[in-house]
Image (cartoon, rainbow, N blue to C red; front, top):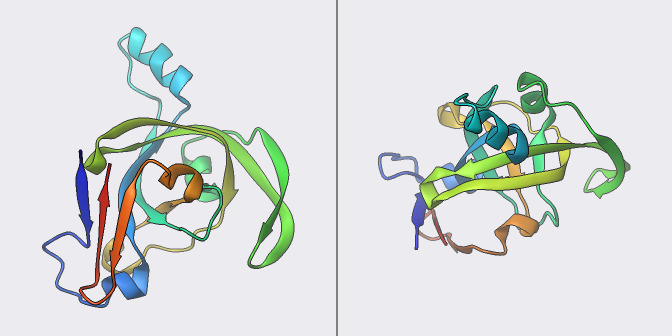
Length: 155
């Protein structure tokens, strides 16, 4: 069982959870089959991005930052109709993978994950590159402790 607590113990801002939301460190990279292909040849994945995933219990499915996917040069594979709080529209989809090292989840496939706009870096330089929706929260226990401004994630 792995355990991660946000904010990290060295953060003194009691309003960080309220201002930013519950964040979980994440590394985004190429799809797992490509990653395995490269590893078998002694090569490292082409590119990777490290930052944070925002835990979003209101999202049925997870999403990745369009900007990060462009940065990693991961092409869109399709477009799907979506409904968001902003209304109906179309979203690009991507094949990628994620790892969550602080909760010991090394290879999580992101097949047909939605692309989205996640804005600018948050206070303290925390950059959000992913929304972790209910589809990827199923295997976790997330405890939101509002009075103490903490979130604990365990596997």
